[in-house]
Each structure stands twice: as C-alpha cells, then as structure tokens.
Length: 201
Length: 354
Image (tube, rainbow over all chains, first blue to last red; front, side):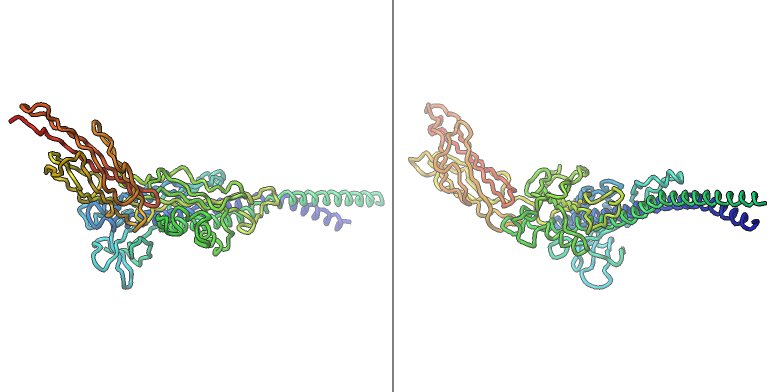
C-alpha cells in the first residue's frame, strides 16, 4: 500500500512537472526563434543592400570613366568625370539607406585631381597587360594604360527594419555599416567593370 | 482496514484520473505551442529563401541595365534602344529574354515583367518602353519603378546633352518554384507577392545630336545688291561677300545650299533633313522651294528690295530684306539639331547725292 501511494505521488509530481515543461520550453525557444528570424531578415537585407551598393558604384565608375576618356585627361575632363560618376550613383538607391551620394574627392593640386587615396571617387589608370592588374591612382593614363575610375563607399549606414530584438533586449539592432568598391576601365571603345588585384600609388 | 483499502483504491483512481487530466493539459499545451513553433521556424526558412531570391533579382536588374546601356540608339540596328524590350526585337535577343535566361540559369522562373526606361534621343523626362510581354498574372507585376531617386534628365542644367540613362526594373513572382510557399497552410501565402528591383545606368553609346555642316554657293546676284550672311549653330563654309552683284535685269538672288557634310556619331547614314525658309518683314516670302527634305536645297530665290532712289540729289537709306534658312537634321532616334543661316540682301541708293 505504501509503495502504491509513493508511486502515485511520484506520478503526480512528474505529471505536475510535465504540465509546465512545454510552456517553459516555449518561453525559452520562441524569443530565440524570433531573434533568429530578426537576424535572418537583417542579414538578408544587408546582403541585398550590399548588392545594390555595388550596382550603384559600378554605374558610377562606368559613367565616370566614359566621360573622362571622351573628354580627355584635362582638368575639365577630370572634373566632369567626377560629376558624372556622382550623378550616376545618385540615380540608384540602396535598401535601408536611400540614394547613394558620393563625395567627389577632388583636389586639383594632386595627380589626377584626387584628394585622398581613400576617397570615394578615384581617378587613375590600369595596366593593359601584365599581372598583377593594379589600379594606380597617382599616375596619368598615358600610353599602355587604360583610363580607370574607382568608386568606393565605406561604412555606409544601412538601417535595420527589425525592431523585435529591441523590444526584447531593449537595444535596437543596427544601423549596420557596409563597404563596397568597383573599378571601371575604358577599353576597346567601351567602359567595363574589371577586377583589380591591388590599389597602388 | 477493508474500508481504508477501498478509500485508498478510490484515491488512487482519483489520482490517476487527475494525472490523465494533467497529461491532457500537457497535450493541449503541446497542440497550442507546436503550430506557433512551426510557423516561426518556417518563417525563418521562407524569409531566408525570399531574400536569397531578392539578391538574385537585384543582380538580374543590374545585368539588364548593363545590357540596355550598351544597346545602340540607331533605329536601323536591331535590336536598338527603342525595340529592345518589345516583341519586335529579334527573337532571343530582347531584354526580357536575356534577363529571363539570367534568372533561369540561377534556378528561378522567368520574370513576370521587365520595364525599360530611358531618356536618350532627346526624351525628357525618362520615358518607358512598352513593358514586354504584357503581364496578366500576377496583376501587380507592373514593374513601376520607385519615384525616388529621380533620374537626371538627358539635358543637364549646364546644357550638355550627351549624358542619358537607362533604368531597368525586373519583377519576379514568388511562385512555388521560386520560393516554397511554406506558410500557405497557416494562411500566409506569398504566392501573389512580386519581388522587384531597379538599376539605373548611363547609356554608353553617344547621345549627341547630329553635327550640322552647311555649305552654300551664290548662283546669281543682281547688280547693285550686296547679299551677306551669318550662320548659327552650324559649321561649314557659306561665304557671301559684300561685293556688289553683277547680274543685270534681275530682282532675284539665287543660292544653292548643301547639308551633305552633316554627320552623327552613331548613325553613318539615313539622317533626316528639313529645310525651311522664313522672311522677316518687309521681305516677301521667297518663291521657288519653301521647304525641302533632301540633303541639298538648291535654287532658292530671294527677292531683292527695290531701289530706294527717289531723288537724285539726296542719298536715300539702304533697304534690306532679311531671310532665315533653317536646316534641321534628325537622327533615327528623333534627336535633332538645327542650324540657322541668315541671309541679308541690301539695295543701295542707285543715285546717291553727288
């Protein structure tokens, strides 16, 4: 009899424990999944934003290098190339940021009128043949080299749309920062995007 | 003892019933919780897949914009910017076909819509081509691009016209074969959603209007008249000196115009020409050919003013008739340039004061 009673008590307490188990698990798992969902959404948006940023930078580099080659390596050509690169970039949007506005990075006392090597629009040249393929910003595009324009944007703020984590943890995620660059050369009568191995003076 | 035994048996039965009830509560909790859990897990998976497709559509719009930016504006080329996104483009060469190929290579279906807009050929502002093909389903695949940012007009504030842009918008329906409709069982279907991306690029062919070159030959000038000219917005040689004419018994100045030297950077032939003549009062409208569509405009006759002489002892003022000959040259994508040639014919007093 005693044994039977003990068994019943144990079963009762086990059932009692089981009754809250699912709720406990749900309390633990649901925020984790919601957080995971938020991370998935934000990461995916970041990837899309990065692709759009690259698209805008490529459009800017293509437009800039076409103008520079067409007008020629003159002060007017360099200035107009920067304006056209900037205009093409601003015609594109980046998710979570809006139209892409680039700084012209102009300083007429430097070679190719580049202000800073880390600037957002950099005029330079790319060697036609040879390896590695380098973008040289401190040299003019004379014989044996292509006119080249490099556009880049570092630390572009992309807003997070996901606010649930902030409800849970009290801290909003984001804004995030993304970075991308593109190099375009004018080759065989046409601007085109190229991959360069290094950016050198 | 027996009674106590019955009581405990009854108690254990009651406990078993209560335990079964509790197990029922656990099952109920489970039944309530599991769908929520499944929905959340499926949402994570589905959104990840949707955003993967989103990236692919973004890449497709860039691919399309680059293709469109390289297409010729010259309407004799096929495809050209005007028909690139229409059914009249050569088969397998339309923008829609190329973008669909791009998407299908990545395991997606064809797009439900592709919209190509451009502001080349003097089109202001950005003007859409016909979306191709006409989209019936889903009905929201109209590929309307966002209002912001505005694409700069082809004519920038500084007057330059060679910069023009293409804007390509691609729409892809989230049908089952693109993204599994995992949440449809829970009442949230993505089947009618469309992912859309837009990329804007500069047009690579030259977007300049034709360059006009006009030459002219003075065929005849009556005696005692001095025609002269100047030209605006055009190159070429057209010299009418101030020398007095020599042809007698005539009241007509005859000039041959020639626009053969005009050219277009992209279009080597097939430019459209339109010659017109206007007269400024008091000059009468010229006879002969008032307008012409050829490269030449020959035998144009301009009336000369009457001799202002009314008194041999005084010098009367000269009388001048002014005419404007306008040549408009249009390329095949309707971008045009105009050139004005001003012709002035002056009659001096034939009997000035001695």
